Structures are given as structure tokens and as C-alpha cells.
Image (cartoon, rainbow, N blue to C red; front, side, top):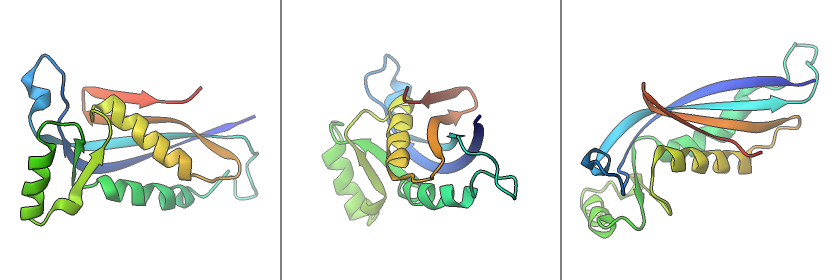
Length: 146
């Protein structure tokens, strides 16, 4: 027997993705991202009819999303990376540059976030089954390990 718990979080961040046929994705732009985490819990409900306190999940997720919130996510191989970082240093906002080692597409970001959270999550009876990331009302990506 198992229970599934889903919790949604939000953060705002900018990015640009390279390699598309349309210039739109290569422009510097941002989203209000919605992250839904799906946890599978294998233990029975306790006396309070819960499997775990969802605040324990937030303790792990919040610092990760704080890194992303109001940041600009940029690939370290982006041709503008060095110049962009210099501008951000001049503007005293370099601490909000979130550097990744992959093209920051929605698919890459959801996998990255999943891996960060699952590596830090330590709930006795639950595992992170899936992460879903939405950047617009019409675009959603998910990642799960089999």
C-alpha cells in the first residue's frame, strides 16, 4: 500500500535557451515557474492520519528554490556568459546569476531540480517520484527516475 503526496511551489527566474529554430527562446526572458513534486510514501497513515509533515519537505525545497528565485539561469557555455557575468558584477547582482552546466530548457531544469531535491531529501518512508515544472500555462515538463 502506498500514498501519493503532491506539493506545489513557485519561483520567478529568467533564462534563455539556445539551439532552437525560433529566436524567441534565445531572448533573455523570465517566467513565474510552478514546481509540483510528487512523493510516493510506503508507510501507513499514523495516528494523525498523515504519512509525514509536509513542512519537512519545505525545509529541503525552500533553500533550493531560494537559489533560483529572482535569478537569471544561464548555461556556462552560453556565448554571452562571460559578458553577462561582467554586467551583473557591475550592477552588483552577480549573486543572482544561477550558472548551470546544461542548456537551461524546461526539460533540463526540471531534471536538475529533481536531482538536487532528491539528493537532499531524507524522509523515512517517502521518495520523490516525479517533479513537474511549468513555465507558462501551455508548457509543462516532468522528470522521474524509473
